[in-house]
Image 1: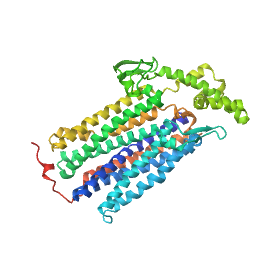
Image 2: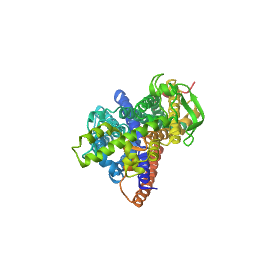
Image 3: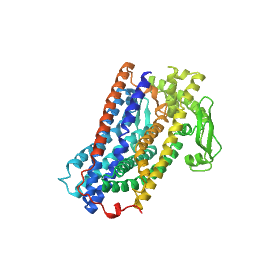
Image 4: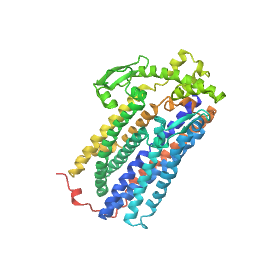
Length: 516
């Protein structure tokens, strides 16, 4: 493996591990606000006990999330030095704001959350819990603004004098439509994770006939919150697909394994076997018109196929070669008006010319074969994206069904009426994490071969490091994170086995009455 592959491997491993903790932090923070609001409104101590118990699990998860998240930001300077140099003025700003505004807000109030029970009034402690939830969500917002800019780089321009991307409109960076859709979809997925976590552990307690007052109330909160969150995740995921269809057409074509542009509205491939060599999808089962309606919101809009997008990439590479040649002239003579005019007319395609760096150092002299190869490099891995997307969507609809069923049983006061369904809830615990991880892969893998979509290829972004250094750091991270995983699982299991410290043993009759 070369340096770029090793750097991608290391960042991918650390990102996927870190993302095990982020969704649960987002979901549990809101659930804690809901539970503590009930305690504030009713004064019933069982709701305070619930907040303390689920808050302890939240704290364990939060600590692990912080420990794994910090290392990711350091990697931008160590493993991705040219990326940091090239776009650091833009990408670094949201990360800095996240640290100053969101992370410190969350970290400060989480201390008050744990140590303020005896020192704060009910209203003050509820405010602290709300601030913890706000900090968690603001942290996700600014991280996803940075990531959204990588997906759709608006509000920035290339400066030929500094050879870097610079901010031209920070408001466009913040209000980037891709970033906003990613934020609401990601947070909704996190809420599903938190709801499933509470639902599964509560179901386990009911199966074991333990802590029934807490488990019944927790399941009610989780089912209600979960059905709303899972519906939102699916709807917002659909909106994310529409946004990608506007701004990342190659990603959509790869996800759908659409090799050739179909007549509008295009059909959606439910399942099939994508074949990159043959440029076709074998044994495809299609739903007529569905893809066109999802991606274009119309019956007349076309969804371009991979082959047509590759042809468009060839044209953009040719345009980028003109920009690259003009840039070379401007570096030698800043007053060259003709070169400036050519550069300004083609600068938006400069990133496509950089794809040729994989094949030749002389970009302006690239051969047709090299241009063709670079154009096909714009196609991300089709089969992994195709199946990852379908796993994510399938799980999304499963969550709606499960939470909807449990919410119905909760309304009927029959949560304990079907032990088999409680076992299904327990076994469903890892599924939101699987959905989140494959969703992360769809978002990031679908952007390849770009670090910044259309601007900077991934293979040019890495630092100039010996491969041995990266092998050493990858091995170190695997060992360290494996140890952290063992600690995390041990602490979680021990806390769940210990159970909550209950100060109220009786539950209302309406919640514990036997099933009819």
